[in-house]
Length: 207
Image 1 (cartoon, one colour):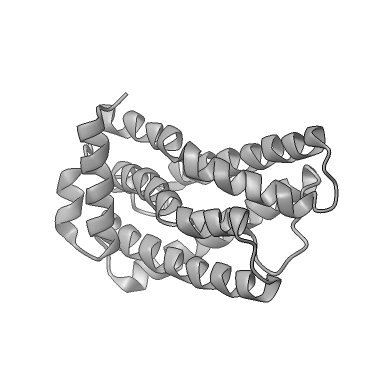
Image 2: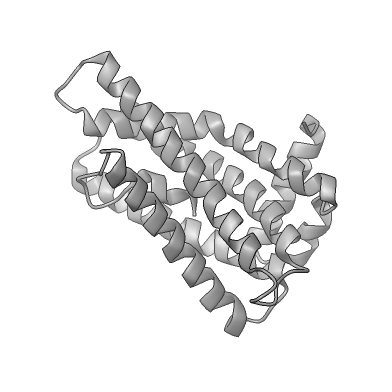
């Protein structure tokens, strides 16, 4: 597992990439070892994601205080998030050569993994407000939409820096990957019986 100093450097590098700074990529370890180590970002992201899972379970089980039900929703939501994180990467790996990003696949995955963990932490305050200071549903929906939009902007900038391609390539690439990730998330939620009834889904804020 990367050291704390390494994790800090990787997160900072991802943050610079999200701001459109190419030098952020230099702070990441893009070696073969760095590729596999980047999946430790899932461990780094668990605390903020867990808070989101709990909030999601509270929304779905509203009016039902049964602990077993809420725990079941948390577990199923965790499964959705983890699968939705890994499955698009696997699919992209199979298609990387065909779409001409075989040389940029590893840098993209490394940056995306650490960037996803960073976004999860950046949105912790909103999750805590949702848990401990419930606001009207319309207000929370607006906050969710705003954060969702910010996450799109951040992750798109990171994607462009990682791929080192112009917008004419990066934008279609990002749109297809984004739609695929959303589809996987919604499909898994439906299959596991945890469809969210509201206008915005917190699990979509990762991408």
